[in-house]
Structure formats: C-alpha cells, structure tokens
Image (tube, rainbow, N blue to C red; front, side):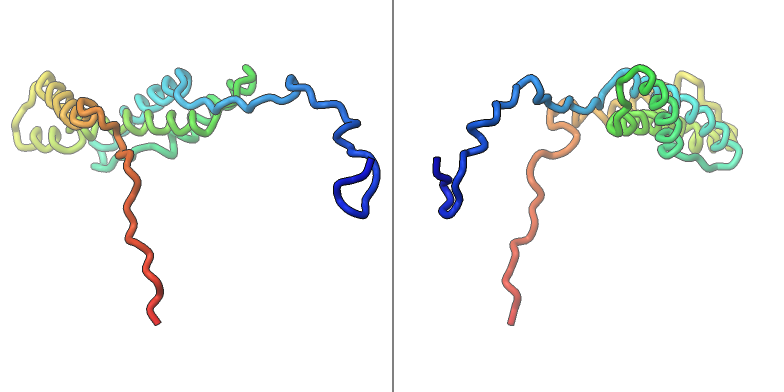
Length: 170
C-alpha cells in the first residue's frame, strides 16, 4: 500500500493497531465545591472566631475577619481526614470553608456588639437582649432580601463593557 505523502511507502500504522477500548478513557470527576463537610467546618471555625472577636473587640477595639486563619485551620483539619477516606479536599471546598468562617466570625461586629452597644453602655443607656437580636436580624434580612427576591443573583450576568479600541494616533 502506498503512503499518502509522496516519497514515503509502507503500511498505514492505524490499520494495524487495534482501536482503543472506551473503558480505558475516563472522564475527570468534577471538583467538589458545596459540601457538608466544608460548610460544617466553616461554621465551626466561624463560631470560634466570633467568640474571639467579641473578646478581642471589647478589650482592644480591634477585630479580625479570620479568613486566613479559617483557610489554614480548615485545610489542616479536613485535608488529613479526606486523605484517609480517599475523597480529596479540593481548593473550592477550602474556599467555602474560609468564606463561611469569615462570615460567621464577622457577625458580632455586624450585630453591633463591638461598637454600637458598648458605646451605648458607656453612655448609660441599656439595650435589652431582644432589641439588638431583632435589630441584627432585621439588618441581615434587609441586606440580603433585594438580591434574593429579585432573582437577579449576587453578580450581574451581563458582560463588562470596555471602551472600544481605537487605532493609535500618528
């Protein structure tokens, strides 16, 4: 049999080789992102961060979101466990752990425990416990409701507009 390229002769190697089996071709599984273990670890770390933020905020006036702390603690706890179980702990799961922990850890500041309520106490005004809980819940619902109720999602889906490219001036 002649080769399709001029000057070469021989047989076509594709005719002699057996076709590959489809069972050998495997698709790569999708990376896990929203898992119970990642969210649970984020909430657990966030609870610890919230407690430490209240203490540190009332003592020094400073608080930290704890995102780096949450990423390191979440990865160190869940990566070792997931290696033993055979299910890898993905970077997307670590991102969820970090985000959930930072959100829960920032709740004392959002509820007014680190700024407004101590200031009112220093002024001699007392705020009942149900008052600041209702206020924190109301502000949380107010901040989240427009985006959720409108169905628009958290990020706009339209492409970004860039200025048109203009030719260089000579």
